[in-house]
Length: 230
Ligand SMILES: C[S@@+](CC[C@H](N)C(=O)[O-])C[C@H]1O[C@@H](n2cnc3c(N)ncnc32)[C@H](O)[C@@H]1O
Image (cartoon, rainbow, N blue to C red; front, top):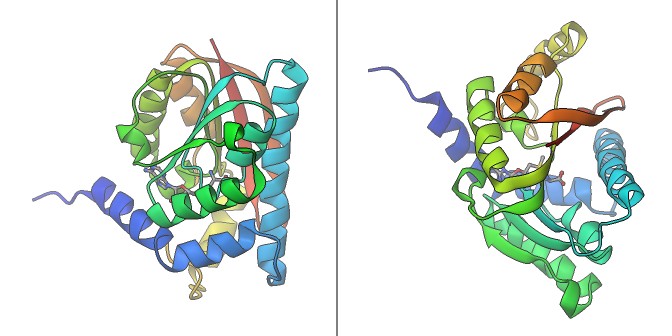
């Protein structure tokens, strides 16, 4: 019987983000004390979020836009989007992540700004939104699964799809190989690098064209951000 790595990845990721991954990433995405590596990742990730916010704010029509944040984590993007007036639908496969995001939203946002939250695998989401964002989620899935996910996210997005992923270059492939020799307790999930050409191919096959792009690179965080429009 052939194995089914796709389902395995999803089940492992879900368990991880409901257990040790939740504690680790809540700390990284928070503002409390963290170690040097985590601080570096926090700063890198914040740059990705800041870039998205800057792009959307520059367009001048953020207030009232419907935005689906798929794999929202603790709400690092959903909350500033909601604070800026967007109507945000935030979901994540991990109920712990969603509970944390909801709590942070209730503590920091006005009631009319609150995102609508759901615990959901992004491939089970339905509805349509002006913009769909999916940041730093594809890293958990191999290319074939990532392409299927891009297909589903495309079906939800009317005008814009924002994706970030860890780009597969020779240097990062080597870095990852070295990292794989030192599996510390915090490295509980596999990380998949994606060739930018593959991601763009998957987007173009869904009728998207790339509008804006950015790269965030710190010592331990690297993420390619693409804005696709139609
Ligand atoms: C590295 S975190 C990024 C969180 C958030 N997008 C951000 O940038 O702050 C990855 C998140 O993706 C979620 N996730 C992983 N696979 C998912 C899936 N198939 N559907 C929905 N969420 C998923 C995880 O639970 C986790 O919260």
